[in-house]
Image 1 (spheres, rainbow, N blue to C red):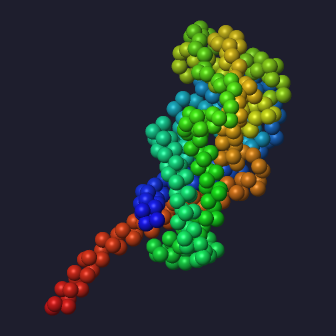
Image 2 (image 1 turned 180 degrees about the vertical axis):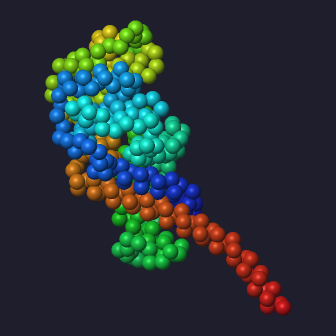
Image 3 (image 1 turned 45 degrees about the vertical axis):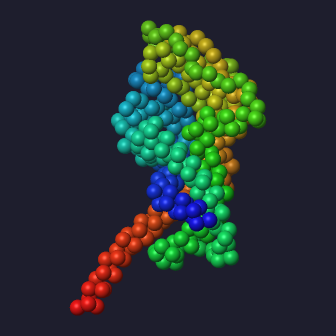
Length: 357
């Protein structure tokens, strides 16, 4: 038990701050739709394929790399461009905001911090490994709490900012949010290490898994993206058009993502690929995938509270705030305790010198 406590304490001292950052940014992003106060952000969703096609044609010609269409959460089309630039466009085609870098929009740099720690793919891996250690923290924390369960107290805040009371608070608040943290860590790491999770879930059964996007010959001219959207809607009339992605490199296809009624993921996983002439090349339909894929589809909507309404969003907010508090105070108390221990020999020596004098 002492070894378990040692590992829990030392790894928490080094990784606690990263987990606190992930918890705080994730909590803020949960409520993104409520605090983006732009004109038309609260407009009801109206899927007008013709109007969406006109917006897509205009923005594609202006250099858009990706267009995420308006949703029930945010009634604006999000246009992403190279270098972190982009714009928000109302459903009637009016541009309501534009930016040159992600630093001009808090929701974008917060997203980058939460997902990549401002370090691209390497930062994403660091966040993923921190999440895996978070899983271990929950498991070992429950084991360590069990031996002192009789001293449990309901306390949302430490009585004093000293290592002892903070450790006591850490145990008690940790056991309360442990189930939510476990879910947050499983779904978060599952999205990053998806191949490993697919292997773990393989016994559930796998259906038709989507392969790599098809390669195409470089287009001589810009195809009609409005026609692509119309073809996609004709193929799946009951699905919502969610995203248009344009090639960023030679040989890449155009793709349209849709969300069928049975899908949990807000932007859907139904993907249609087109070549430079607007010809439909392939369709990836998640409804033909196996149970393992269906389970993994729930990771993002559960993690980001895109399902379950206000009640689930409040629970995931509690998970994020709990992680922030646990990580920040664990890091602070660990290093304060270390600093005090380093000072004690000096204090004792000084006392002996005074006594000798």
